[in-house]
Image (cartoon, rainbow, N blue to C red; front, side, top):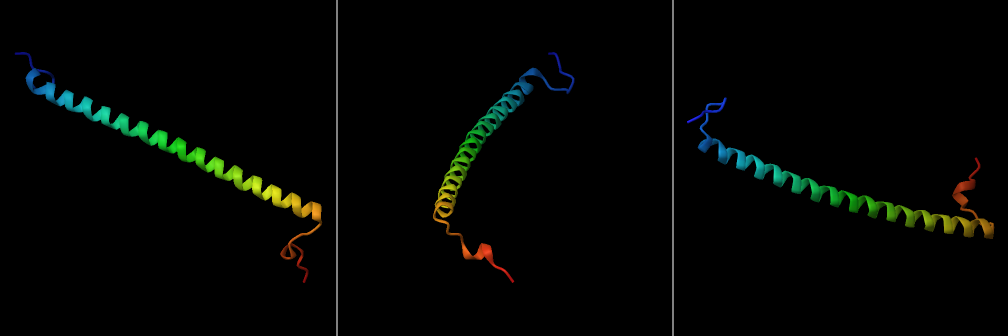
Length: 77
């Protein structure tokens, strides 16, 4: 039989290669799932940030049009 450079016979190396392929397949699957979850959470955070910015702009516009401003912004010593 022909031995490889690591000293294993082909019958001994096939299970090791199959195991390495299966492990890489599992790692790729976990990476894909992590990427999808990360993209979802980034999108959710952007949506929440946009909602808070909209609310703050709406409240600021109301205060500007009414001419009322928070007292804590005008403290003088």
